[in-house]
Length: 441
Image (cartoon, rainbow, N blue to C red):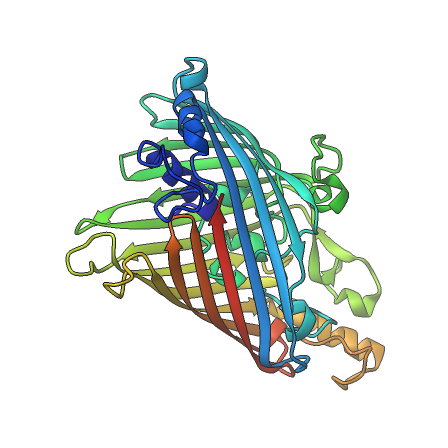
């Protein structure tokens, strides 16, 4: 499924004729600020669509975790964007330009209370937190289609997760939100990080697509001072993803299935051994360098029922999985499954309820390296400040209910359960209460 920001923009375009006279804060308007007395729809007809989106998340620890003291944390993101349809503006057939800047702020309850600060958590109970509190240019790309839109080329600055291993973001826990390769691969940067990129997509059939990409692998793009960096300085190599995407309608109900592979051309360090095959923490030598890094992903989402014959309501099931290079990756695999039911109650046909669980598994070689580090340092007591916690498997679960107050505002209270936060067995299981607010202005 498309990310929330893209769905909101498409909804705005589709509803433009209906919302031409929409007043600010009208419940049936796609925008909180209304149609600007018709100006917004007029601009869209001319080829300029604006986007103003907000996501805010609150996380509060109810019990458990590394620190049982009660607290709450708030984080948010603002996204300002514009899409220019060059077919309308300049007569260029099937061409457009996308520009988006984003700002993130706040703290994360996972860091404040849930995880052991010596190793942190594997996931996050507030997915919108991360990458610093400042503005970034997140999208600046040109997109051109050919051959009746069967071939689609996208070039400029964007992120892998916009096109590859994509997943919607209606949950608040990070393990059920967005591209999961970016969460565990270590070299794949999700929103709001951007890099120079090229993506080529071809429709093999109306339902089956193949795509390939090349993305600059540049760690300096994640630095707080480089939010608007355009130069390629600091580039270490490239991430090359390929993916097959199938979007069938089974019994008239939509589905989306993805299978993909990524390859990094950048050098990566082994998580355990030196160049002689011995544990580096014991030999004292540098960790062995590998010339590449790779991984795979699978994703499936399928609506399986209709509610009282209404195709817009019903049960959708999903599953996601990733697997990563065991020589160079901290996390060797991740799996999640879940369900979303839209329109469960006739009085609230636009609301949805979601339930999901996940497993994040730490590479045994990485785990062994931590245990050897403790042995070399002569510490074996978890309570010792110098002890390096040994990470194994973290489990996350979330139950949420999305209240669709208006076409521009959804509020999603949720309850999360985190077992072995950070994969550390000594950390108490945690309960987190969350609240996610999504709005388009």
